[in-house]
Image 1: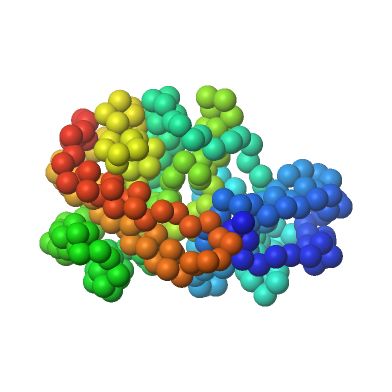
Image 2 (image 1 turned 90 degrees about the vertical axis):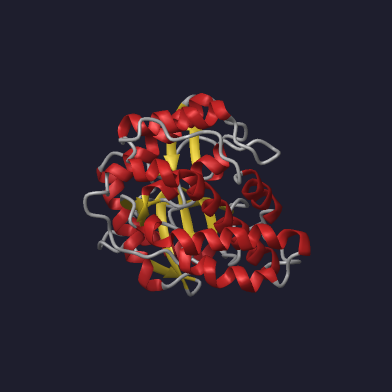
Length: 316
């Protein structure tokens, strides 16, 4: 179970009392998280999610709270931070920064179809349009410079046969960095995997876990989503699923010519980011009772993205 900081009932009761939500009925840890400690919390007045932030700086948390407030105001299905009766959104519990948010309805989709991908494409475009005119400033702590720094360090741990793929990907990042950063920007979710989206039947009902969000190229966010939602077991992209997501997204926000040109590279860079971060997590949490995602999944996807068959539609 990915709960880094366990809680006792009495300390949680003390924490939730100022929200005015009635008595604490029950709580349980959420196994799916890989970076923070998350709990389902049942109160007399409803169902909620408590997050103890385990990674990152305390200084970043007001950004996440403000971003979710902006997206909530834009009528997007996001878990905005609840306030206590005296207006506090960010508090501490067990010596960790803590947020209490509404629990959104729905379940994760394990085997997405074209309809799911269209829903995700539409949602992602709406998220970008809500912030593209004036993105809230925050750099990524796992951006292009991070890849160029961590990649050579991780190369020392890889089998020799994987080194050419890594070196090729890092060279592409270095070569295209300036052009990638000049693409149209907004606030990004930056982790829009299947386990961060909720569906109730055919309806997309929630997007969760914004703790990787930052201001950057919208195309990068889309590449991250496509790489997870539209990949087959062998790492290649499913053309039907990919076209469904891209068409739904572009119906809300048409693509620029520069985005169409850099699309294959952006897919590869999005694979590289998660290959590297999963290698780091596998090393850091080896032997612990923590959910560790397999780095091989994104190595395989990166290998497959050396040849991208599905282009961006309707480039302006």
